[in-house]
Length: 381
Image 1 (cartoon, one colour):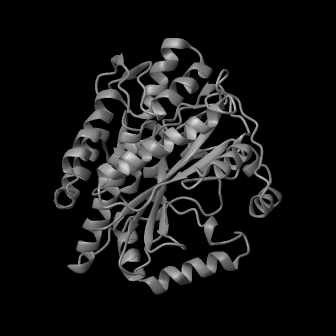
Image 2 (image 1 turned 180 degrees about the vertical axis):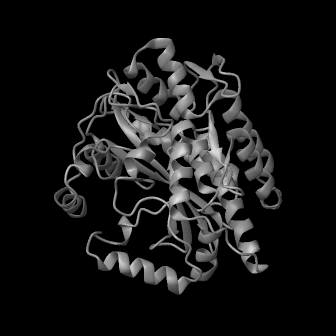
């Protein structure tokens, strides 16, 4: 069974106002002194933390570590009057403060206003592969399905005090980076290396870490890294998407071993699929990965579940993933839940603070059933 692990980026917000606060440096220093820094690391801005799990075979154990890491980050943040919030963008106005790190300083100097104003948090899922050749074959065969994972994790409707009209504003904002988004078919590991070398050879990117593809071979671990997702509001969604990602990799690898060809969708078509997923999340239509035409989000998600069900069953993940997926339609994505709470309070600061409670599994606020549009009490993560 393949291992799977995740990296989650979290916002650090003021515990009273909900606004992002630049306390990551002090928080990490205190964590190191206390011996708690293991799963925590800094990010581009001091208003962010990254929390990292170990590789797991058990999806239940992965979910438990995600919850533990979020709880640790929140406990440490409270020591500075802050909270850790799984928000992919800040609902309140924010002025990011760059982290004092040579690499991040170089990014700030090179890329103009983009890194100075983009404050966003994603989810990166690492799934083990046996070789670069298998990894590239998987990348070629999952690229039409990754927009569905974006729709399921959409958690950034509010930005800078307003509703953006998108379920994932982070995805729209992130697309401004020079190497972000879907990529072409590779066909072989040699071709992948050639593409990467050519991109790095332009001098536009600082290093391989800036290959912000929706999915890529990790340059540090024997994994593929699926990077398309918003950080989910609750830990249960993170575990659900991690299980789906592993099952997608298993399914794609088997198709490759059996001589199956990769879907021939163009990069432009995949960008449109991402855009549709970012706009409506699970509340609208998605691009059907098999036909390239619009279809209700619920139907496309059902297609994904059916496609990977044998792998889910083999991994023992089918019940957890099916339950987590049903909860997304019953209680809403992070985007739907943020909007429901905003409709009830008309207060973006309250949305951010409520999100910090849901981040660690507390129950708060209201949610929306995306299939009916009705609201209900929030169910904790």
